[in-house]
Amino acid sequence: MAADDASDHEGKLWDAIEILDERGREYLINWEGTDPATGKQWEPTWVSGIWV
Image (cartoon, one colour):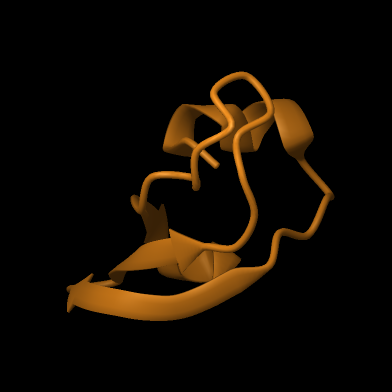
C-alpha cells in the first residue's frame, strides 16, 4: 500500500509482513498482498508510528 493511499483508506487495517527499518517515529513496512493494478507485491512504505 503506498503511503499516500493511506488517507484514502482511513479506518481500514492492512496486513504487514514485517517492519524493515525505523527512523525516529516512522517505520518502513513490508506489506502483505499484491497491488491489483500491477499484480506485484506492494512496495514497502514509511508509515508514521501512530499507524503501527
